[in-house]
Image (cartoon, rainbow, N blue to C red; front, side, top):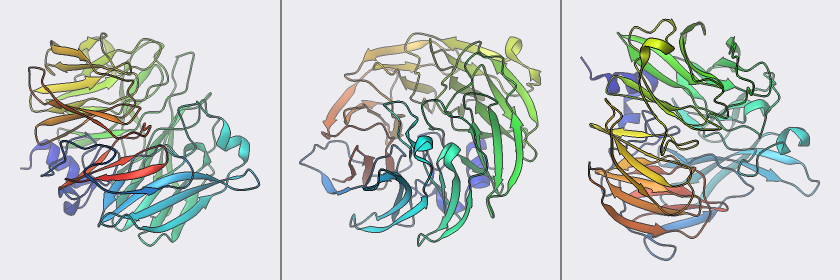
Length: 413
């Protein structure tokens, strides 16, 4: 039998996606921030170890994804009339040449401009699978394109009123594209047919939280050979049956809202943040959870250093996280014991990644602190790229791809 993490990844993506060359969705093949790549760059700067940089038109904080030697992004591009085009962008990973830049939607200006100062109209990250590129713009629409940029279908009938714009990415599971629509009112989780964009199911959140809006990305997990879809929202995290959207269980976290971190499943536990105003990191036992599982299935919680925005990463028997204010921590994932906690320079929105025994913490000014993935703190280096970034990096053998405010960078030794 395959180990649980490999079972899940092969369920979501073809076997090729497990290659260290691919990074086909937000946080990589398994959605957990871990790369199997080799020769990953350790040191770089704005003037060294850059294979190339290319200007990306418009604005967007969607993280780069990588498949078949191509990098994919989304971007919101203004025109001379003040309207905004929501585009899918494809760049050759070897040369940095822009292969295509395709308009997908042209929303009403009021739809595209209602957002937080740290957000953009193109913040959700694409997914590449089975020769298709899936792009998502929240309340403004979702679409599929082929690898040459031809639009195959569009879906923009699922409207909701956003707060601070949109941010959560979709996830692909068993032929369905699933995402959360956590807006100002009537929040929901929805699944679209990946082949056509048709709505398969839409499940209301039924939250009691006063503020309904959140921005998290769902995560499928496998429990006793059955797949559950984990989707945090305001007030609670819910587990859903991906086939029909039925809620299986929930764990409440009070008035937590604007939830951003993507859940991570490791060591038999789920790890996720509870959002604003005071973030709490939760470790939840999903096995056997039914209905309201708050009382019996919370293994531990951590308040100090808990992230509002970045997701955590778990490698072997260590959990690594960084708060928005820059407190990085190594935690025992089974007990919640903090092994070390150190302040890193800067504020953080990007989620950390692990490659070759190193944790890469990228801050909002484009500086990346590289820390040894050990139970004792060791800062290996700090790399200054010199351009603001809130997006999470993509990893492949011999290279990192980092999206800045105006450029996409390929970092290679």
